[in-house]
Amino acid sequence: MSSLVIDLVLCGLAYVILIYFVATLTRNSLKKRDRNGDDGDGGIEDFTPPKIDLPPGVIWPSDAPRNSRPEPVEF
Image 1 (spheres, rainbow, N blue to C red):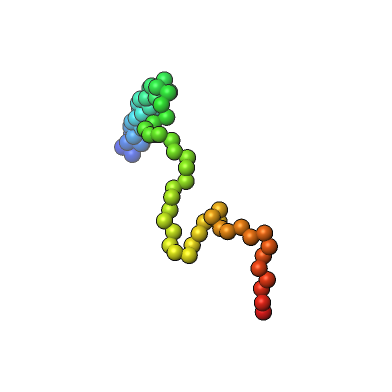
Image 2 (cartoon, rainbow, N blue to C red):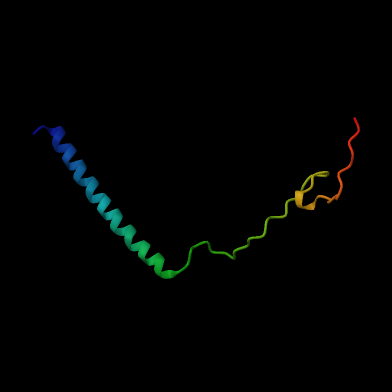
């Protein structure tokens, strides 16, 4: 066999062994994480929207004045 074939076989074997060890170690850490019951965000959940300081003259649609009748437009 040529040296290229031997190198490819050894690299393939090393790749398979590396993937095996990574999968084994990852599986163990995933099992430990599931038993903990913590989703890992580490804080209190706050679902309120942020208060953004808008420039003058810009308002949020929810803060807009409510008119029952639209104003007539003159041409």
